[in-house]
Length: 339
Image (tube, rainbow, N blue to C red; front, top):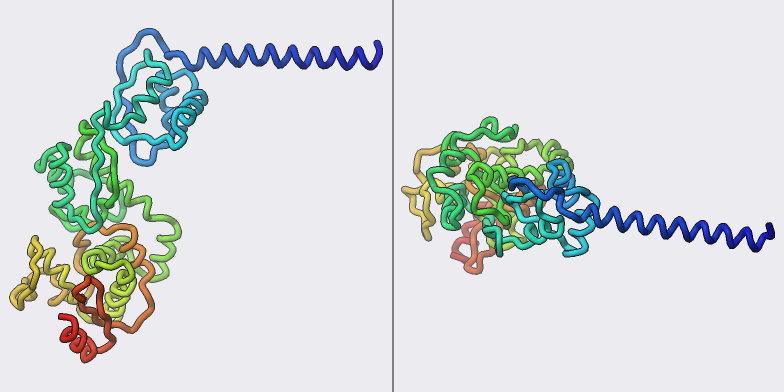
């Protein structure tokens, strides 16, 4: 056989392989994108915060709701480049083709009763509960029981104060897409899981360096959150608190008094500063027994990396920013100047 004929034979063989392979792939794709079964009941699939399309695809294949996890992932990204999974419970059936399942997952609140809930930084547990109840998710009684009694397997909660503020500081402020059918326990678990994401190896290493436990860090972050209005002030306020802790000077945080009062007062009086409580940082040195609110990422970061200063005092200005001072005499001047 001549070299030319041999080349033609090889090319024909190669083209045949491509054609057969293409036909084979098309046949497989046709099979993979069909419903898993022509019969079957709905199954509840729960999507937690942080679930990826790949993880969901494997779960759906394992539960015999789709035929191919790979085909599902491809379809998902083809339909929506920034494929987003909405947290919550979904009723899916093996009779649904993958394309229909994907449409249901990405349609969110339009057809699945998903509610977007934004928890502001600095909200207390009670405010968060009230927010969810207003959104139609659970009742105050249900959430209170979960917060005060339910078990959660996180070491940082081991010595948490009892009562409504047991989880204070760890219900992470964020925007959540939540099914109205989700249970109060699952909601609280979702918020705790989001906080756990803040506990990176880098954070733990930094905590070891500055000799703070996780509860101490979150407590400090909550004080910063409630005292700071302007972002640049956060690490400076954290610096004042750290400097006072270092020398054993009471923190004298007005935010802890507001926490005790359970309501915001425009002006605190002498009698307010004498309320007998371990949370009263005017009467007791050191950090309070636990966080006084749920701090956001920026306040937690400020508590982790306070600015290096000699400041021991700060006073609020009318625009929400603060004036800082090293001595009490300087502080009195600032008070006279700005208040």
